[in-house]
Length: 420
Length: 200
Image (cartoon, rainbow over all chains, first blue to last red):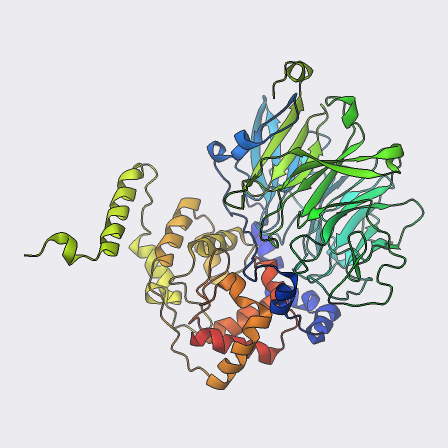
């Protein structure tokens, strides 16, 4: 526990941050017009009292998990895979069987090892700045925490004494806190993909530093922007047939309860560097009401499908396993966590997206695991962040609200009997 | 002698009964022990008696929302929110000990800061409250709720420091939405807003 917490406390000192956090971008943002949120709310018809939905800093006890209220299609079953991991978000399974779990506000990275069929949860890193980004290559775990990038070589053999190398400098990521947590992954091209969200709800960002998805060599060199005009993507995966990148993008706040919807975007092959519209054009072609631009949606790659207003569509996983029925093969699972900026909260869920013509045609969204919102209380019972396929074809999904990971399995016989 | 019910207002009586019922309802094992006098003295040495700070740039913690206190203390323990002087004694504190501190200070009566307020600044700050939407999280009387702290009557010097840190994305462990809300504020705007909140 808290293995190098002391070290990171130094890293988090304001003095260490001053140099990078007060970079040119933050300074220029200060001179930009101050958005009048009260006016935006009045125009959007949303209650001006909407506010963030906090994540509890302490995990819910196993007995308090709302799992009995979840609903799944016939034959599917959900169970608790692990509870008691406050703020659980990103999952990554190491080749030697360690499940790494990244978080946001709580600043921890967990390592879950299985011994004699039982899980053992270790807090392998602590005190980090929103360590949501986890990736692995050649036995090394890479943790992306806001502007910091740490590499833990040979991590699975050193879980009780993890040592890291700080490789932040070469990546040179911005330190803004708004949309300052990142989902990262190595692509089929061996490059590390890192999105940087817009440092605001709505503003004109500098695409060289913000509002983009970029790819890097594992050491941070050869940065190349693959998508720009992205407001905030916190989940992506490569289609198993086309190998194209598909990413979620969260729509802006304070422009209506029902619009703009979140997006599920396809980056077509050969279109690296394409423009996805932020801040001028949202969802399926809605011009922004604050930042006006002639031909706002011209030359914008529109989403393959929209995924609901203020749904906070986050983690993506294309299912390739054999456990689920054939109709689920090459289908994308998306965790729709549910955003705060909606009077009647979005009916958050784990959804599936089917794409016609082997990943090149029309895309449709269907709820898969529901029952995550208490509609009467207008409160989320669970807030899912990432679906993650296990080697046996079962699907794990993280619940940040309760600090838990669930496991979804399929049983043909149960389906035949009409049981759930 | 008057009957008991007329001596106590009905509201007070209801509160007394509720507390009594709660005490009965909590099983002994889960009952939260109050923080020790020793620990409270440690808190008070910087945050003031009962959590009302008279110390330069140290915030008052009396009457803060319980969730805010719990969240802040956990993040300080974790080393996410960097408060150097608190780090050594927060390091090994258990969740239930933190919960007890949060419950205790949330229940203390908050006092307005005794620093001098610049009324002209406060008036200017008042005009920034609506456009900045401060009340949607901090509530209309700025007493806070959930992750948003009470800023009404908070120490002026602390407020200026804190809002500036949020604006500049230097406040690790802070709510990113607050960094968003503080975006574009000038240093003068921050002084004005801080005077307004401190004056409440």
